[in-house]
Amino acid sequence: MSLKKVLIVNKTYPVAGLELLKNKVTANVLPYFEYEPDSLPTIKRSITDGYDALIWNTKHKLNAEMLNLVGPQMKVVSTMSSGLDHIDLEEVKKRGIALGNTPKVLDNAVADITIGLLIAAGRRFKEGIQDLVNGEVKYGVNWTLGQDIANSTVGIVGLGGVGQAIVRRLKGFEVAKFIYCGRSDKPEAKTLGIERVPLNQLLKESDYVILSCPLTSETKHLINAETLKIMKNNAVIVNIARGEVIDQVALIEALKENRIFAAGLDVATPEPLPKDNPLVSLPNCFVIPHMGSATIQTRNDMATIAANNVLLGLEGKQMLFPAY
Image (cartoon, rainbow, N blue to C red):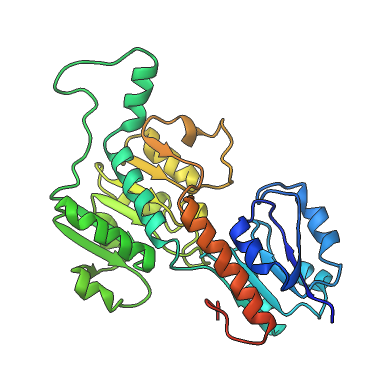
């Protein structure tokens, strides 16, 4: 009996995942990175080759057009991500396709990088590094003063696994108060000592605003020209969610006018962010290229979960992490 066929659409899929698939399925890895626009025609041509499953580790949208091309024999998809904003969930679900993702495994890695961004933006690392590189280091007790974490109020937008991991890490920084907002009460909030409040209250009270929510129609441009006006002048905003949660035009204006203190961004729109984008050069914006889950162990774990999701789905069993 011939083996089931699996298409992996990003050439950087870790060996740890390929080893799990070996001898169990026929896996084809396309020779592209996740961001390459030129890869789309090749993906469209490739998925017509009778694949039974996809590992959709790309930024391209898995939508009705793609699903029509792949054919009705394809019954299993796994992402190699926690977020599902690159998947048309309604289309996948109505076709009876099993869908899995890789949540939870990246919580610690993303939480770690959040703390790094929070400190880097709040303590003006970018300006200090630029002064050092340019030989312009200044002296005196008022040089490049930043914001304290101790005795601050930290607001978390989205208290999921990543948000909770962030709070646990910040407990050691003597934060005065944690607050969060979200669609529903989180049972973990009581244990963590964090209070749920409306978004406007969170923005008004927080010295640090951390975005760790999914990208949905409700959260797109959640931070915009109007909501930025609510924030404190000393506020630092950190985004490890998705770039489109922030209206970047409005953020750039707020940073230029010093209406907020700083921003720390792991995500942006588009990705990668062009080098001439103002966010790259603004002294009070510390931006990195979507490195949240980029540790060796985390990426290997994500690959093995995606592989197991596919293998279980092909056997008609429940995936490790079903998306619905």
